[in-house]
Structure formats: C-alpha cells, structure tokens
Length: 450
Ligand SMILES: Cc1cc2nc3c(=O)[nH]c(=O)nc-3n(C[C@H](O)[C@H](O)[C@H](O)COP(=O)(O)OP(=O)(O)OC[C@H]3O[C@@H](n4cnc5c(N)ncnc54)[C@H](O)[C@@H]3O)c2cc1C
Image 1: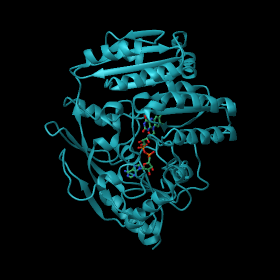
Image 2: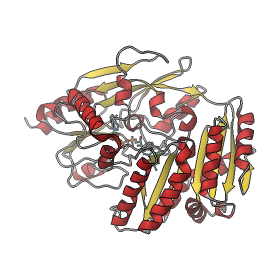
Image 3: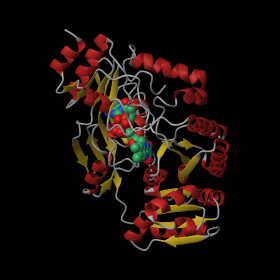
Image 4: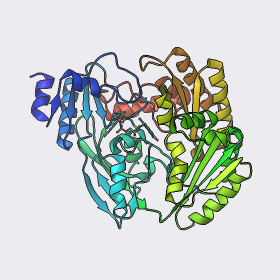
C-alpha cells in the first residue's frame, strides 16, 4: 500500500485537497514554499501522532509539525513531499491543580485560553506572546516564545516542567516532572523547548502556573529621543527595580500608532516607555519606577485605574497592527544585552537611512529584545531586496553588540545562515549530533532550525 493509503487507514483525519494543503503550507512569516505538501494530518490524539511518525519513518517522508501557524520564522512552512502534522485539534486542558500551581495540557490549547482558565483558579500562565489569542502552547514550547511579562516571569522555558514527546520513530517519551524541583537525568525538557519541531512532536505539557497578582499598576513616560528612553530603562535595571512589563516605542512607531488610532503620543516626545508593576509591593515599585523614568522625561503619567492602565498599554498593543494597516511588514526580533539597547536603536536608525527603508522599532526593553519592523509596499509578501539587506544589517548589528539574531521567534527557515554566524561550526556540529541521535532519518521538519 502507498504511504498515503496506510496513513489514511491509521489516523483520524487526513486531508489531501489542494485548499487544505495550501493553507497548511505557510505561516505568518510571509515566506512561500516552492511546492505544496502531500497531505495534512489533523491529529486528534497521541495515537494519530505516533502513527504518522511511524509511517513517515518507514517511508522516509518529511513531517512538519504545526500548531496555529502564527510563527514568524518560517518554521511551519511545508514544501513538496512533506506531510503537515497539525496538532491544533488536540486542545484539551487536562488538569489544573491550584495547590501545585500546575496545568497539564495538550499541545493545541490556545495560549490565552489556558491563561483565562488558570485565572478561574486565581492563577495565570505567565508567558504572553502578543499572539496569545491565536498561538498554541505546543507552538510556544517549540519556539520558546516570549512576551511582555517575560521581563519578570521569564520565557516559555521557565514555565515548562515536563513534556510528552513523540519521537521521529513513533516512540512516546515523557521528560521532566510535575514538581518545582527535580534533577533526575539530563534536562531533556529544555532540549525540546525551542527545538522548532526538529527533534520531536510535543503532545502534552506540564506547565507551571503562577498566582494572579492582586493588583497591576502602570506608569508611562515620554522622552525627547529614544536614547534617553533606553537609558532610563537601563537606569531601572541598575536600580534593581522589577517591573512586570517594560516596553519602549520609538518615534516612528508612535507616529504610525497615532495615524492608525487617532491618538497623540508623538506630541509628547519621540519615544515612549510603558512600565507595569504587580504584586503586594506594586504601589511602592511603580512609584520608584515612575521616579526614575520621570528624571529625563518630557511627559509622564501614572494610571489611576484599570481603564487608564489599559489606555497606556494600548499604544504598545496597537503598534504592530498599526504598522500592518499601512503596508506589509518584516518583523524582526533581535536581542542585545540591555545595557546596549540605546546602541541597538541608534544602529537600526542608521540602517534604515542607509537602505532608505522605513523601520519602526519597539522593544521589550527590560529584556533588551528589540523588534525592528521594516515596513514596505509590495504586491506580494516577498519583500524588496533593500528590506532583506536592511534585515541582514540588523542581524549583524545584534551580533556586534553581543546579542542574538532572534530573541523569541526562532530560527525557522529564514535565519539559518545567521544561526551559523552566531554560534559557529562547533556548536552546529553538536546540533547535528543531537539531531542524528533523535531523528536519524532526518524526517522531522528538515531544513528548519539548525
Ligand atoms: C501578530 C503576532 C504577534 C506575535 N507575537 C509574538 C510574541 O510576542 N512573542 C513570541 O515569541 N512570538 C510571537 N509571535 C510569533 C508566534 O506567534 C510564536 O512563534 C508562537 O509560539 C507560534 O505558535 P503556533 O502555535 O502558531 O506555532 P506554529 O507557527 O504552527 O509553529 C511554530 C514552530 O513550532 C513547531 N511546532 C508547532 N507545534 C509543535 C508541536 N506540538 N511539537 C513540536 N513542534 C511544534 C512548528 O514546526 C514550527 O517550527 C507573533 C506572531 C504574530 C503573527
């Protein structure tokens, strides 16, 4: 029997129609594969995943694991001959344990749905990618996703205690634990976190939840230029302040938000910093943060209630949608030591001028994680050459400043050359050895990640 015939007999749902294959071939990166995948498996349970990988191994067919397809690095792109293994239908929250502050979930659970469910128990799932309303926990784990709250609570890796993973040959393993501590064996959980579907398929996760803070307070300050804003963020770190959110928007971003939203942020300064503090000491913390930000600010405000807090944060939340309203955008996510944040903003401005492209920059400033968004007009999603050259210069800048080419979106398909430059040949060799050990036939998401 053919591969597809055997697969159809074994899995709950197999789609081979052109429309389904087209939809499953792309993610939000804008990149387009040359051909179309063979078929799409809509997995309903672990057995579907195991059967797919077992058969794919036997027939040497590449498998592209897929969550919601919101990835920005081309990690879920599926080319000719591949099978897309869509696990978004495995979306049960199996358990929430309020005493152990733990959730056990299937991979297709939407990030925001888990957070909302945890809230019913006075808890939260802390990692909060801006795509939380769409992205899946499995995708978040596979990309080690970050977000605004990571400055205080860490990235996805810090929230993952244990995983159920189907290996390339169809074996199911469990890694990690349900406990807060535990050091038995190698830390395979961390190996799978951020592995972009290249080492195994996540089919279950035990996740750490945290107490919902009783209050969240917000302050914002505008600055004459982005360097002053960045220095104020560095001053917060030097003063050992612990914001739960620390976001910085440059003047170009403020202008585009104003244009889209009818607001007047740009009249207050050429850069905006928004900070939040939460927990029992929130009042004291936000007062100290506001004092430090206020020193060089051209304008400042403290939110007095949740509505004004949401209003201040709205500038940040609407940044990307505002840019995308007026054209296409290449979304980058370099990360630099936070002490170099001002240098990163200045470097990006120079790059924009050198290539004559529009770059809007905003940052998870507390993490040194900068999103330079290169705007362009083009009939297709394929960016013009100048945009690609500007992106390359931005990656080079990140490395020059002691940073990384990707703080949260991953290597995927699009940044593989840059990974090689960042980590060097010996680390790539170690990657290859790990891949060989876990996926000797190289069927799992080939050509992605590393
Ligand atoms: C508007 C917007 C805002 C965003 N904001 C953020 C942000 O703030 N922070 C951030 O980090 N990212 C952000 N992203 C990027 C994206 O949402 C994240 O990378 C997210 O984690 C991807 O989840 P997904 O379910 O869509 O995964 P997909 O895009 O489907 O897949 C991403 C990668 O994970 C692999 N994968 C998916 N599921 C599994 C699984 N179960 N097992 C093994 N591998 C798997 C895929 O093969 C692929 O390599 C944003 C994207 C958009 C469109």
